[in-house]
Image 1 (cartoon, rainbow, N blue to C red):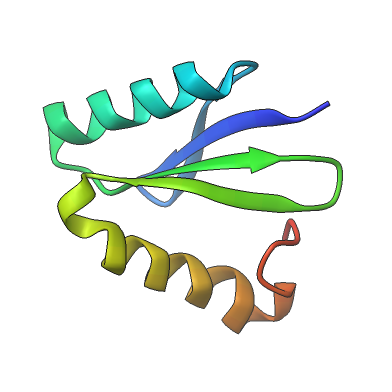
Image 2 (cartoon, helix red, strand yellow):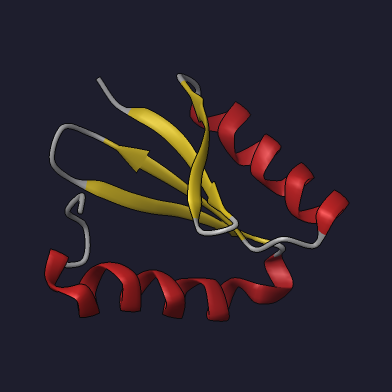
Length: 80
């Protein structure tokens, strides 16, 4: 079963069972604090980036995600 997690401040933070709730909470955190928030679906082996907030920083957030996980040798979607 997949979990939905938020990553901000360089750490994994809140965890949710519901994708919509994770995306909503990620958007709220970004709007209220100005933090760059990644919302990720995590399975046993593979994780997938579902959203980056605030929406004005999507390009930056996706680039950082690729550097952290593709560039670090994790194959783009695999858990470190």
